[in-house]
Amino acid sequence: MKTNLTGVVTSVMLAFWAIHANAQSAAADGDLVVENAWTRAASASASASTGNDSASIFFTLRNTGQKTIDLIGVRTDIASIETLHRTNLGVTGVARMSAVPELRVAPGASVTLEPGGMHVMLIGLEAPLVEGATLPLRLTFYDGDDLTVEVPILAADAVGPAVPDTASSD
Ligand SMILES: [Cu+2]
Image 1 (tube, protein in one colour):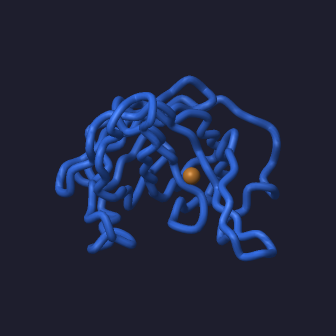
Image 2 (spheres, rainbow, N blue to C red):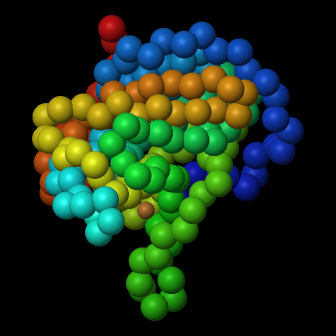
């Protein structure tokens, strides 16, 4: 992992961010920048009882401020369960996923969610993820603020954003 979740200070300071929730590939909320969000096209679960179709969402959280940022919740309108996950390769080489209760970003640091590492897991898709569309993802933070990111839906076999776009526009 290129990220460091353990070395940050444990004190949590309240941050006061203005909400600017209309971003495209980069969303900025005060001292927080969300970059390069993406997910893959996926079909919806056939039924609620048997559905286990899932998807993963990836992005980079960058803390440009002076205070620690704690991401404590993720939400969409199309999945039964949304959670933060981390993929770990065990000694046998078998990938296993475990829940991440919160994601902490120290001042000046960034954390990247990427294939093989941390991701937002969507379980039980109630609607398909259509390539070319975007999926609103609502991020909730410890201080009560939230930020909605429009996540571009790439091809089902995509391995990342085709064109890195870190510019904050709109
Ligand atoms: Cu997962």
